[in-house]
Image: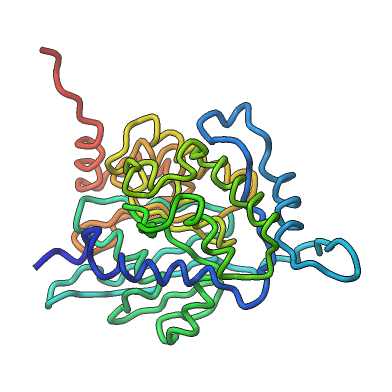
Length: 329
């Protein structure tokens, strides 16, 4: 039986990822389509800031009004407390503990990196946040709302605020890149075609995929699929984005581009992110805090700087192996 902690790309939760696209189906317009830019993320130092484009795209996304152009109401104060909270969460598969009494939290606008070896439950944590898996015990809260007892209708509301970028992208094979990115906006409704085209073009430009906009996913590399999946996730107007191993099986250039984009979304737009990775160098670029999972337990949760100097022998071994370089010939 395959290890459910590192689910293969063809497993059920990938099929469930199509319900993630359903998460981009607001019955009424959501408050902030503010996660957009027009330039690729490979050169952040010279790019146009995201924030001015945010207001423009927000206005484009508003349904037409007989009373004139839509106005953008100033956002209200954000709720107090962490955006995401795990308290004593446990889950097992076939009698094997995957996570035992794991607790952590993510504050608004921060990036948490979940580190650990393969098979320790990193991706399982994300799937529980999305409601694809249910914990055996413990509490999971999003914006203070307990989600472990919610039904599918309640989880659809959560998925409008929390979305996930899967390892293989989970794109619709029969749709072009442009159609994939447009899908959440079409499902949402209330966006005129001209405005929708502009929004989609901005998102495709944001991830540097202009040259493959009319291609089918089967023709794309793993890195390109992941970048397009990120654009589609942003079209859903989330408040929190979950990234499952964004740099696995991609070359260093694509990995840097994806890392730059995640950073820009955080720094310029205050995105909250949870990034599952095994790459401590990638985490060093992104993380405000780190959760290290080992043998089903949270062996460390705290600032990155404290993680790097931890004297826990398992953490020291993990860091040493991650930094390993072949000796010169």
